[in-house]
Image (cartoon, rainbow, N blue to C red; front, top):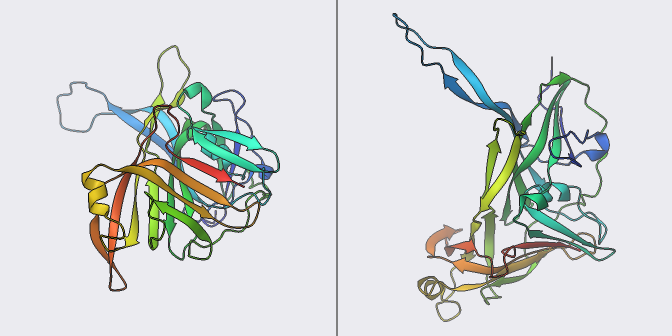
Length: 313
C-alpha cells in the first residue's frame, strides 16, 4: 500500500539524447506539492474493421509518452556563480546557461534543438519508479504579492515501463530559502519606463511548442519547434499623467519590463524582458482599489534569442 504524500522527483542532464542519465538521490529537486505525473499519455487508434453486430472496436495505443508537471520556488543556489539545482530544467526548456564563476549564472533563450539539452526525470511514488527519458518542456513564471514566486514546469518524455524501486534518500542542495514576493524583497521594478508602479502580480508563459515525434526509422524524441511568450501584470491604476497604459497599447508600445528579487549574494534573481509589447489594459479590483491588468507579449530583437533573461547572482 503506497502513500500519496511519499513522492520524490530527481533529474539529471542527459549526455546522449534519450539515454537515461540515471538520476539518483543527489539529483533531487525541491518541488512544491503540485507535483503531478501522467505516467502513460498516449494517442489511441481505433481499428476500422467491419463487424456484423453492434459493439466497440479494439483501440491500439500509439505514441506512448510521459508528462510530468511541477513547480519550484524561485530562489538562487545560495552561492553567486553557482547554478540553482533546477537550472538543468531551464536548459531543457530552450534556455542556454552562461556561468561566470563567483559572480552570476545567466539563462537566455536558444532556438536550435542541438542547443537544447534533455533531462531524465525519475518520479518516485512510494515504491514505484516512473522513468522518463529525453524530457523537454515548457516553463512559466508566477509572481503574486505575499506569496513565494515560482517557476512552473511541464515536461514531456519518452515512456519507460515503471518498476518497483524504493525511494532513494534525497540530497537537496543549491536551492536557497525562498523570499516572498513583496515590497521588501522585490525591487527595481521597471514597466516601460514607469518605475514607481504598485505591482500586485506578474506572470508569463514561454509557450514553447513541445512536440513528441516517433517516426519509422528514427528514434523517439521530444522537440521544441517554436515559442511565443506572453504574460500579464496587475498594478494599481495610476493617473493618466503618471503613466498612460492606454496610450502604450494604442501605439503598440515596446519597452523594458524587469525586476530584481532578493538582495543577498547567492539569492538574487533578476528577470528581464527587454522588449515587452504592451497590450490593451482592463480594470480590476483589489481591496476596493482600482487596478489595471496589462497583457504583454515577449518579443525578440533582430538579434534573436533575447526576449527574456534570468540572472542569478
